Image (tube, rainbow, N blue to C red; front, side, top):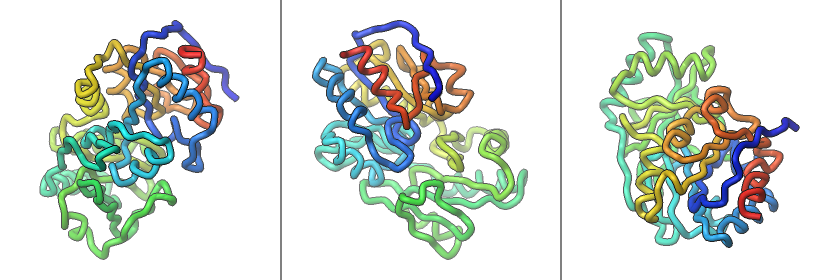
Length: 274
């Protein structure tokens, strides 16, 4: 168990923003009892809990149901603001499918063939995967299509990329250079390099949700584990990285807590609200 690095104690946070995979969720896609209790502790003190995740709304819905959450959630790396109670999107932005195809072509011109998947827009959108693509989370449902062209049959919120030889960091770096302003490139987990609408990040989604709740960056403590959480940390007053976090996120964090498997979020919330 890695020792956490703790900084200032503060009890004035009215918004607790948590990533899901590698952060609030354990590796088996479950929430620990201690994490549930810590979130309840924060909410009893008047704080709001907001999920901010790369997962699209349909893949977040059952997890919110497990938590008993009927409020807002930021999904799809900030491309969707989901109202769990009403089961509807309050706001969403799609990635232009022609731009997505162009971006893939530019990346493949640099590194050869990549394998792609897409998350469709909407509360019932599917995850489609082309031949050769393997899901980084085997528990997540996905529909395999026959050809890449089939990925573009409906509006999409993002594209997921994999390469047979390149690691995530290298693929993300190449993709950013090749894509330019066509899309925003993020890395949200092992085997998960993504293209999303240009300018859309977890920070833009979190800011929108906070405005709906009447809250500000100064009210917010954020938890995460991957480089896609960096914009969220930049926006929030206080950012806490998990012990299992990517080095790029740890470098900008205000605090490093225990891992997701060791209830790192709970440790901090118990200190702040217990």
